Length: 182
Image (cartoon, rainbow, N blue to C red; front, side):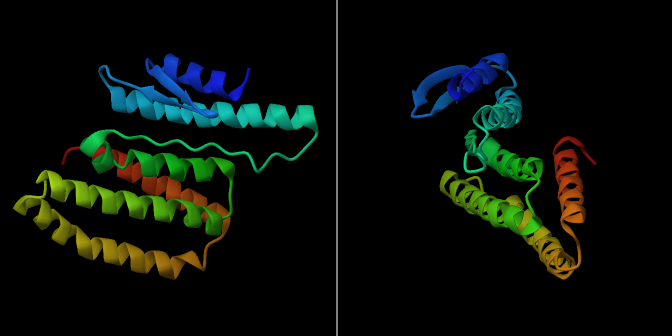
């Protein structure tokens, strides 16, 4: 099974539709109920299957194929941007690869920052920034600064494994904050 077939199979398995093939990739649509969740599950499944496919290719060719990679983008309008699904996919992808903490930060920090900027701009353009939204930004700002300060202080003192666990715990709390109402 080739890469394109594997990607298409994962889209179909998660009730998506392959719109078109683009080079060695594809454009998929998820339009029915729970489309955001199914697209993220398909993305995780693609990364997992790609890793398996890569290992098979390496064993068949007796070559190191670390230069091959997979990139997945999820576009889900304003709601997708607000949930940060694209950032989560890149962060977990770095975790699965077992990269050292410096390389992980070099990949997912720019992705998360770009997502934040794009979300803020799109919210401003669509008029979704209300007085309540600004209030939440202002309330969250000191916590963000505190998190940055703690992160900078701790980053140099922890090893790769501790960093990996800390990122996964933070992802868990971020996910829980999206589904738990206080």
